Structures are given as C-alpha cells and as structure tokens.
Image 1 (spheres, rainbow, N blue to C red):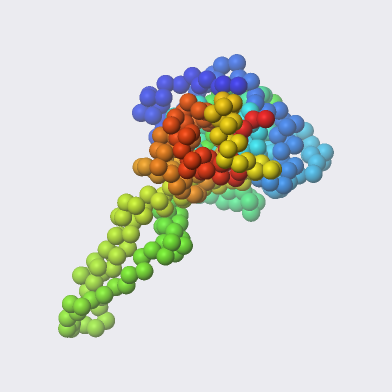
Image 2: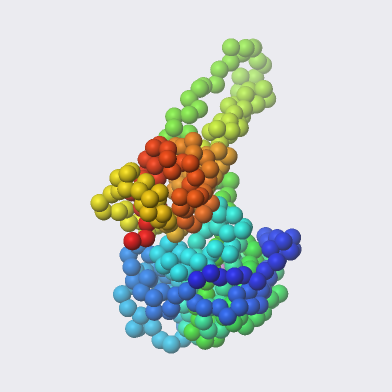
Length: 374
Ligand code: SIN
Ligand code: CO
C-alpha cells in the first residue's frame, strides 16, 4: 500500500522541522492501518523483537520488557505495548516510513508502533529525537508543551518522565492525524479508545558518539600511529608547563585525522549506515551463484528488493551498506542500490554485464541484504 502524505514539505521545513511542533489533521486521508493490534501483540512475543509494556495504576508506573508470553493478566485500562523497529519485521508497516524519506535516509531511524487501551500511555516525557506520531485506529488525547528546561525523574527505573506541563497543542487525534514533535518538547498521549500509534523516529548523533566511534575506527584500521615529535625543542623556564605551540601541535595531530577527507568519509559511511536495531536477515539457502543472479536479473527480468530497515547510504563516491563499504567502481548501479527500494536491469544499467559488480551483488544477496521475491 502507498501512503500519501498531505503536507507542504517546504513550509514544514521552514517553520516546523526542529523548531515547532505541528498537528497535521488528516495527514493521511482515509488511513488504513498496515498492522492489526493482534499482529503487533504477536510481534512483541518474538525473541528478536524489542518491545516494552508500560502500565500505571493509581500513579504507580510499571515497565516490563518483551518478549511477552501472554497479555491475559492485563486489564482493560491503563496499559500500552510499544514495539521498536516494526518496519524491520513487518513488510506492510515499512510503507508508512516512505513518505518521510524526503527528510533523508541517514536521519531516519525506525518505526515504533504502540497499542494502547483506554488510559494507556508512557506518561509525560521528552525525547532527544524528532518524531512524527501517526494516529491509527482509535482515538488518543495528545498534549505537547513548550520547550523549556525541565527536570526529569524516574517513576520506574526504566521510565523517564517530566512534571506536568501546560499544553501548546491539546488534541484528540483521529485516524490519519499526525503529530510532529521536535526534540525537547514535552508530550504525553493517553488513549481514549483502544489505539494504534505509529512513531516515525529520526536519529541525530551527539559529538561524544561521533568521537567514540571515530576513535574505534582509528584503532581497528591502525590509523594515526605517528607520534608527537619535537626536534626543535628549546630550553624553557618552567618545565611543568605545556607550551601553547606544543598544545597546538598535539591538537593538530588529532585534527589532521578528522580533516583527512578519505578517512572521515569512510568512517562516517561505516558508522552511519549501521542499524540501531536487529535486521530480519534470512540469507538464502542454498546461496546463489553469480550466474544465477545474472540470469534472474538480465534474462528473467526479475526485481531485486532491499531488506526493510537496511541502511544503504552514499558518501561522495563511496557506498555503504549496514556498516560496510561496497568495493565497486560501478557508481551509477551502486547509487541505484542505495537510493531505491528495489532495482532491476534498467536501474542497474551497464553494470549488469560487469563481473565485478555481479560478484558484489551476489554477495549482497547471499548476505540477505537484497532478495528476489519467489
Ligand atoms: C506512544 O506512546 O505511542 C509514543 C510514545 C512517545 O511519545 O514517544
Ligand atoms: Co515521546
């Protein structure tokens, strides 16, 4: 199913993205849920899937982590089950992320889906990330407050909440309505009727994560082994002082690595193309031979699909898939692989007749990253 979003992206980017929350009434007209509450509850029973159950009673909050065995003990009020990265596991749900791809693949994270019974929600809180919350079946009361410094507390070790806040958006959301919330704006949603909510989340690394990952990259690639040297060392008055010029030289040693475009790009591509959630990888058994991949694409005109949730990104003329750099000189074909959800003989162009490219494609298919529908 194709979801068409009613939104003027240019004015959204100008006035709301990372700036102000926005309620988009009827963002999706005649919205059809891609998943049912039962299917979602079933996913939260699986080992590989990351899920939580949040409930509250008389002001006391409880959190349990999946996989869950049953939901029978839960009453008819005040609980919510939240499942991460549903787009990785449930094909129709992944379609709901497509309209948001205009904001860039690298910033996009996963699709979290929650099912809440009346009164269910995770309480007032803030997130570090931008999120679009889509209302599916049911109705839910959402409130969003102003971004002001707020104290956070933990009513349960696994739950971070904020104090009550005044609302700048206070709305009963109906199927197809969308709430955009930039980082740091407090919000809370309580179901009025049993509700499904879809959160399209974005990611934004902090400087600490970047530095730490960059340092790991240097270590695993044995880069930056050169040492400080000072053949011009001169006599000084204060042996305890690190001189200004020495500090500059040390900092330049570090900067020269980050400033090396090749090192920076390779690290960035590997880092940012890693998924934060497990992928539904099912490498084909038996694996494909190169001649089979070639014949399926070229002779049988088959389509090759990208695994949902797989991060395939381009940095300059390099292409990265799930943390690995693709070794190829078939730039246009690699660009198509990253850019589109599926490829065929047309988007792949001349590369289809290049044995090196077919070898790469075969390896990607045999890893389970791309697949043929059979
Ligand atoms: C939800 O309860 O569906 C969304 C939770 C959130 O506000 O992040
Ligand atoms: Co939130």
